[in-house]
Every structure is written in C-alpha cells, then in structure tokens.
Image (cartoon, rainbow, N blue to C red):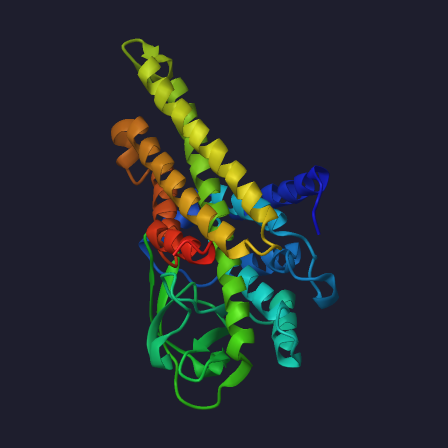
Length: 347
C-alpha cells in the first residue's frame, strides 16, 4: 500500500505523541551506565500502537502499510532516543509474514499481540546471517526476548528457540544504552520455521527492513542533534554576539542542513523501491549513505557545542553515542556498500 501525505502525517503525529511519553535523555543516561531490566510496560505501549505489523499484510493481522510508513515511525523513534527493540521486532514480523506456514503464522500472532517478544538473531556484517554452530554468540537487544529466530547454516534451517531453550549468560549496556547479551543455545528440540531458499529469502527481507529502518533511525537522531545545535548557536555568545551570527559557523551549519535534506530524500526514494526488484540494493545504499551523513552531523554537533558537547550532562552526546552504535549495527558503511554492489550486480 502506498500512503498519501495525509496518512503519513497522521502516522508521524501518533509516533510523536508516543515518544513524548516514552523517549528522552533521562532513561538513556541510566541505560548507558547499567544494564536495565526490560520494560514490559513500555513494550506493551509499543504493541498497542500496532507498529510491529506496519508492513505485515492486513490478512495476517498487520496494518498493511509500506516501507515509507515504517521509516516515518522510526525517524521519530530515533529523534527521541526510544530504546526498545522495535526495529528488530518489525523485521521479525515481516520475516514471519513472508513464510506461508502455520507455525510462522502462530509465532507472528504471538509477536503482534504482545504474547511473546521474538527477535531475529542476525550477526554484524553483510554476510549471510548465521551463528556459527549455534554455540555461543552475541545477540543485540535479546534482553527480555521470549524467543529467537536463528539461522542454522549447517542444516540450512531457520529455527525458533523459545525462552526455555536459551540461557542469558551475561548482558551489558552498549555505548548508546542498548543491550548486548551472550546467549547459550543448547542442544535439544529446535522448532524449524523454514528451510532452504525460502528461509534465506525471508532473512534477506528482514535484513533489508533492518537496513532501511536503521537508516531512518540514524537520520532521526542526527536531525534532532542538529536542531539542538542550532538552538545552542543562537543562545551561546562570544565576543558579545551569538556564535550563530559568525559566517564560518553558518556555512558549517548550512552544509549539515544540505546533507540531512539530501539523505532524507534518498530515504524516501529507497522506501519506494522496497516492493520492487531493487529492494536490497536500494536499502543497502541508503543505509550506507545515511550512516555516513548521521555521523558527520553528530560529530559536527559536538564540535559546534565546544567543550560542553563532550560532557555527559549534555544531551547532544547521547545522540552522538546512538548514531555511532547505529552506524555499525550489522556492519559498517563499507559492508553495506559491498552488499549494494552485490545486489546491483556491480561486482
């Protein structure tokens, strides 16, 4: 479904209303310093919004909207530093919706209803998703998960491991306040969700959702960091005048504005390609471009704040941390450019 501007505006308004309640700097600062228990109340609020099913067909319990609607939501999530594993859960929902099996439908229903938080374990990098030998591995945002979808490369199967089949050995906060966990995946009964080419295609789609979604989140973070910086340049005075009146700094700010605007336009175009044959190439390209742009913006934002920009007490540093983490999630820009070249048949 391709939404008009009015529908997208309503989706954006709903997202802004949500993040005003659940986003902000205070919870992120706490997450940065310690491992915080998974907030079920916050997750239930996400479920009530219906966002996990934004790209899931209505026939399977979703909203039946497009990738453009997904990016509108995630840009707001990025701007407000909301931390639950929304993007991974969205990608998992799209993955399960693409599998025509009763077991996948059952898992999808549990995920969309909030009965279970099921995430997809994708490793960093643009290589095929797998956890070697299903042994010990790092899993992003697994804290609070009720189950994982994991690719068994040896048997070419996509497996579902329930909470009773996982043991969280150690969890810790990442630089941005997210979490990363070492997970032991024991031997025993493992439910097969899909196998072979069908499973790989579903995983590729999930990776595309994560790539375009993380691009939207990174741009949302960068945009808010830029707005904070503009406000600071108007109030901070040097030599008796606001530093924003200095032409050299105006030129730097103008360059950042142009970079953000062009990257946001690229994001819109990439989202329109999501249902076509160029989906993987477009999502990989915008992921690389947006990460580079967001990193440029938050680095400049810290510099334009001067010494206060390096202080933990200032919010701009939280956006810097978040963008650094997002820019390396599941591979850096070089890895995503390599994936773009592969799907664009340039190598």
